[in-house]
Image (cartoon, rainbow, N blue to C red; front, top):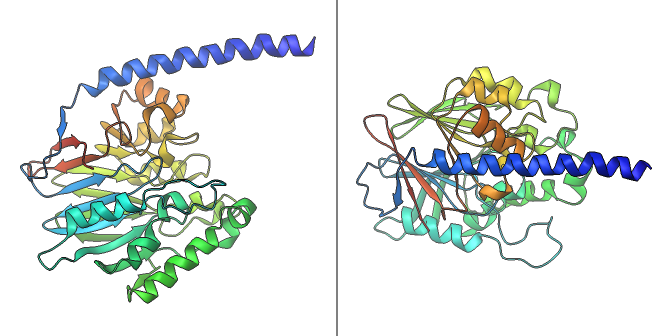
Length: 329
């Protein structure tokens, strides 16, 4: 009897989720028409203040560009994720190739003013070792918070090897003579962008056993009144969205936190930020239904997925507008 009751409850519930998910996908298609997206030509026709959202699967690798300078926010997933139990192909070669394609100077050196790692999960920091070890890439500074073991879940230590990832990145930075800064500045300038960092010090109330995502550092970039927020893996499940929402304020473009997985992009967070565009480092089909619902039904925001579009560049023009292009790989 109990099984029959459970079936009568679960089946209609799952069917309802399916219907709602189909509705959100339809709205995604409708909302996408608000912005014309063309293939990237790399001709800088709309200016050189650009944010490159690379296609690295469901991982973050974002290249900043301004006035001939480059910097990296997160490094994407590499080829040796400790969470994977089978051989697989990561995105190490794609990331290295893209950096060299876009950032190399006349001397054959790809120069990054800095590499900024929002936290130490492999899908954000995994490629950092390969980038630091590549002799044709020079990095001015590595920005990364010190790892707090008290915030980690047991599986992040024993299975995901977050402490090992952290230690190897520091080791590679030392070998490359790349300065490591753990005391993060809250505000600084990069080319034409004014940058503000959030969660540079993890709040005490969420320090214990909330996982490494609780240490995620968000980055706000502003140029000519146009505001972009890169939400790393900030989510409501760790408490960060509730703490940071009003601090961040209105934004124009939101890089969705935690790849659109459960706990990201709560209604409270979206109502506080009021984004007009959302970019997700994932495929549209893997975003959780409730997240798509919040973005399409509540915030009425178009969602552009890096995997579906083979990477996206957001160019911020001198008039404070955005131009989106795709197929950047």
